[in-house]
Amino acid sequence: MIDREHIVAAVVVAAGGRLTGRVRLQKAIYLLEQLGLNTNFEFEYHHYGPFSRDLDNAVADAKAFHLIEEQFERRQSDGATYSIFKLKDGEEPKPEVYGKLGAIRVGELARLFAETNVTVLELAATVDWLWRVERCPDWKAEITKRKGLQVQGGTRQSNCWGNLVWRRPRFQSRRDLQGHRGGTAPKIPSLLL
Image (cartoon, rainbow, N blue to C red; front, side):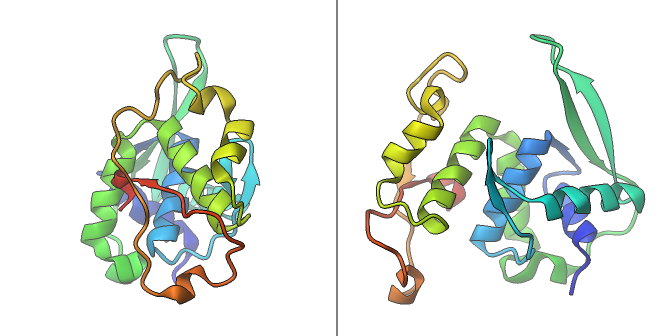
């Protein structure tokens, strides 16, 4: 089994050696897990969507073992503090850290997540959680209830969905849908496919 702090460092490496924001790190690793990166982090629903205390602890361990460093900066707009995770000098992650996705695919996705609006990542992870974990048949209504301003073009992130292309996920077999209570599979931003 791969130590979890090495998974955190590997994702930072895959993102280009730098990843901005704790929410972004949480959502990027959650989405990578759903796409096939075997992290075994346990997630629960939190205010900003899927959240893992295990992952939070792994970040602390990665910092303690000098795999990554966390710097803090302030937004100019409101002075709020945010994190910047950077890779410390060290050896490259072992290929098995990237699992069946492989280093190249994880790198493509991690760089994409690093450049994507963090609210889009939050919403994409929440849609996935509602459909996959909570098995919510009307995930559209539920996400509107939970994230109203963000999905209705409100003031917090007006039109944060931008011009993303939406597609239904392609499933390998009916087994992928076993246990689902019905409803329509959510369309996932194409950036996640």
